[in-house]
Image (cartoon, rainbow, N blue to C red):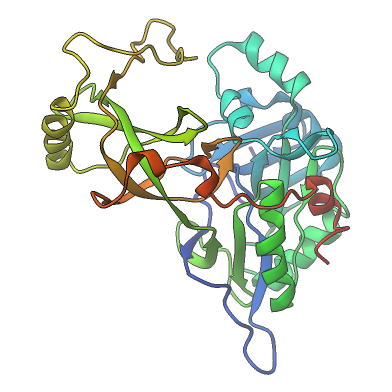
Length: 354
């Protein structure tokens, strides 16, 4: 590709913070944007050639043919755009589909079968939400400050199109705070603040991100052994709904030493030496063993999570501490904080949340 900024490019990153950074007195220092929960994507277009690259530089082009087609129809002939691939899905309170982001539908797009990708691209098409412009024509914009790149993004992609949308942005701190509270109901996961005077810095944590963080007390229902290390690979969690305990997700991040300790601890709670429960089939490898070992439901773990997808954690929760003082029978789904529904269409079109 003959572009002033060529692939691969590391995206500019963000540091986590507990709150939205405040604007100083006088001139504003921050540009605030909603934080989209999808696949980070750098899009390169040079005439009829389009390349989609992931945050880690892996190719995404074959998985999103509708985004490639949208880029050819909607973007400048030569440009580099930083954005997020998302898939609208789910149902709103009024029954309308596509009312919030759907992480599971997005994850299904990274599939080895071309026929499956083609089907999903028609039935559940993805969008690219653009939030930065690195190059256009022969201009390299990466050395320009955020404020100028945002102005060029809005000028080159006025309003966006059916596939490529331009994210909302504001200089007003109170508006960003409202977005943080409201937009979670549409599947977004926080707010990003960008220094207005900063150039685009690949791989550097120049921005600030504020994400939703909550805790839940869950009962440990089982585990999977690690495929290559001695110990557990994941610990499965459940929450009570009525008289049954439903799986809500799994903790997967442990040190090597802790994996071995957990295997010894949980093995002592097995329901039987040969008792295993079938897991959901793996879409990559139908022959892969996804079964897990159920245990007596005696342990309660407190975990940190960000959002729910239906009645499951959207992303893997993080272990905080064991709670021997808690009764497993009290670990119910209704303890979780469920945000009020909010229309994804209003986020995309800028008609809500100001």
